[in-house]
Image (tube, rainbow, N blue to C red; front, side):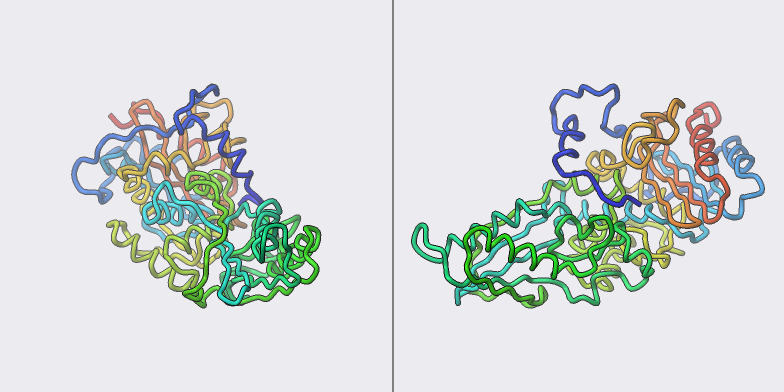
Amino acid sequence: MAIAGPSRWALGLLLVPLLGAPATAQFSILPPTLPPLIGPLQLQQQVSCPALQQRVASLVGAEGPVWSITIADPQGRLLADLNGRRSRLPASNQKLISTAFALDKLGPSYRLTTQLWRLGDGTYRLTGQGDPDLAMPQLQRFAKLALGSGGSSGDIPSLVKLELAEEPAQSWWPQSWSQGDRSAAYGAPITRLALTSNAINDAVMNPPARLQSQLQKTLLQQGGTKVMLNLVSSRNPLPTSAVLLHEELSGPMLTLLSLANNESHNFTAEVLLRQAAGTWDLSEARRLAMEWLAQQGLPMQGVNVADGSGLSRDNRVTSQFVVSLLLRMGQHPYWRSYGASMAIAGRRGTLRNLFVGTPLEGNFYGKTGTITGVRAISGVLQSSAGPIYVSAISNGAGSPNTTIGKVLLAASNGGLCP
């Protein structure tokens, strides 16, 4: 889990090669091009590569019961499978679900918005969709507009009335998040108007109060004499007479996906789940995400979506489900955006320090997952025989990174599976 993600501008520089500019790095950021699917989408149920199956079993050894490992090719051939249908805690591998859901529903051009409205009685209302990079420069622009739109040029209204539209406090955190996680920066509350993702060194426990304080100070600094700030429910619709004065846009979808998958930013993943579902009611968002997954023809037995980030210990997946999801996204029209959002072994994101100096470096695009007792790494491996889908999830292994590295190296040996 990442405490905070890089700014959208840093990610923009990182992702330049995807947007058409010449790449200057020593490796390509683009994920592998995958061949078209042959036959049904569903993963085959019989292991077709006994040599790799035996190698995987020997690598995990006596720890076999705490592991789920599934390896497949782009045609859905099951190359190796160990406890692939056993339900496991995924940790941040859960983000593979929320980002796939968001990309499919919202598209690669989608951006989150934060908007300033003027109501019929002269009151202003600030609404938002959870931009993880909302910060003081945007607030200063909103304040300037509120002060400058109350009369003729140069006039500053004597009283600025501003409403902040926000979710109810009881929905800021998924109920299944522990109190300890909620107080940490990585477990910051999920709100629509979130300065710096509601995290400083630790979680900001009352985001609306912080926002009110910063806006009050900013409005007074810019010449306001009297400010009235009120909190209203974001679930109440805007009056039909409301006029949009200004909106601030988040980074593009690829930036948001990369914050979630490359940097494992929990806040962003939670926002993407809610926006994809079209509701900030988490119970409804979870239901719609599960419905979407079933519509993709994925094996749903043992799967539960409890949140968008993987911080909840009520989440459950199987390694066969994760590989099937990756297989489905590998055939998706937006695969390149999905694949490009992942960390790269030895090169960037949460995989930057893993498998350095091995044949895996630069050749494995994946998502990590870590909470106490859980380690998961899933993604696409560029092997000598072509792309390979891998999901390795441990719930209690002793040295999981070492084991996963050995499994990936075995999977990359095309000679094992002719």
